[in-house]
Length: 286
Image (cartoon, rainbow, N blue to C red):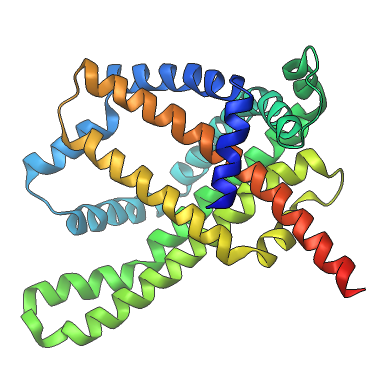
């Protein structure tokens, strides 16, 4: 909680952080209002009467049916790689300048003219490459999660039909699957989150440095990230379930702006604070 408090202090010192995310989230919120993809999917599932379990099983079955056609798989892979590359380039342009300013603010460096453009010139290439790797790895992880969750989904679906006879086996498999997926997702996200401050602060072997940092401080980072997740998911459920109006749209914009401003600032603040603590511990050991 101390690190989150430090992150709030950094934001108050540099209004640009809020302004930056305010502009991005305004564009994102308006785009979501014009093209309400997630809300439409939610309403369709409600109309069809299918529960989330049946929807997931149907999606996996459709995915397997397409994977049997080699030509479709090749075309889909090419399209996905092009989309991921395009998204990564855009993200590289937007995030490289922002991360440079954020890192300078966290490390209390003097404010300079043209910081955003300087950050783009220095870190655009590495940032878009890292983002592409992260998105590709995230996509592969999602596919792996879908495949690995099939046994649990099958057993759960069978237990619904047979009643309480399979309840112990269902609970064991579901809990085991949930725990494995939870920690797998958390490890992946924490590694990639701290890859960016490692990239800005370190020249070489940035992923290894981020991984070592995350390994040393995993549990206290996990608790903070979990709090962020609970808050984010809770608000998203509210936004999806309730009809959107101008006030809800405004609330969504304010929430997303504050959330991403605080979360990204927390990542860089935690990296600085915990890195300094690790260096102090190593120094005391010697």
